[in-house]
Amino acid sequence: MKVEIIPCLSDNFSYLIHDKVSDKVAIVDPAEFKACDDVIKKYKKLDFILNTHHHADHVDGNLELKKKYNSKILGFELDKDQIPGIDILLKENQKYKIGKLEFEIIFVPGHTKGHIAFFFLKEKVIFTGDALFSLGCGRVFEGTHEEMFNSLNKIKKLPSDTKIYCGHEYTKSNLNFCLAYDSKNTFLKKKEIDIQKKLSSNQPTIPTILGQEIKTNIFLRCDDPEIKHALGLKDSSEVEVFSKLRDLKDSF
Ligand code: ZN
Ligand code: FE
Image (tube, rainbow, N blue to C red):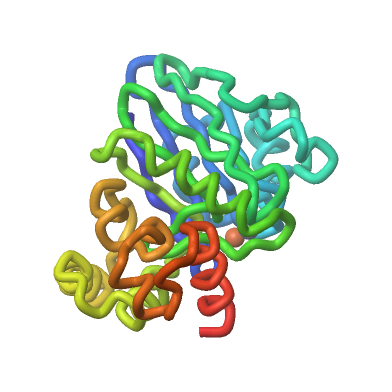
């Protein structure tokens, strides 16, 4: 499985997936036609378009790409009226294949009501859209804080060496937020060095690794006593801590 990172718009990531065995090509969340097409061109084909959710900065390339390459567009069944050109309606926990690459639909509502992630089982690679970011998570627009919290917990249970490809390059601002409320975290300080290195050489900070995120991403650490203390929420539940963090981040 080859994954090509395609920076789009100001801070979006689209991704091209190539299965070398079957020569099938797919794109995840085409934010814009041109940037995606420049990468697709060398494969001369695009079999599938995968959408994590219906927001414009994740689907705006859909129709033009479909028109040029006659691709099939896959999205969650709940988003059927909102994803342009959708052909195949996916269900929670459904499995699907791009050539030999098998992936599972993980339903992760919160950012939107119909948000999904694509988890490639054997390769241990997940595309998380705007559900989970490196050191952060998406804003809660359509769902509830509790839904988002439960969604992140689903991702948390995947193998710790899972590679995470998310929808945006928000890592630097997420890092600053994590540092503000989890300042004693030594793993976070190590990750900071790694992030600075990548950003200063104009490299994406993606992919990140789930095991690292669990140690550093404050939204996955709502049970941590130091963080609870920093928030003045010593006796609160994890979901209460999550809600507080999400609210604080919204205005950070
Ligand atoms: Zn979004
Ligand atoms: Fe987005």
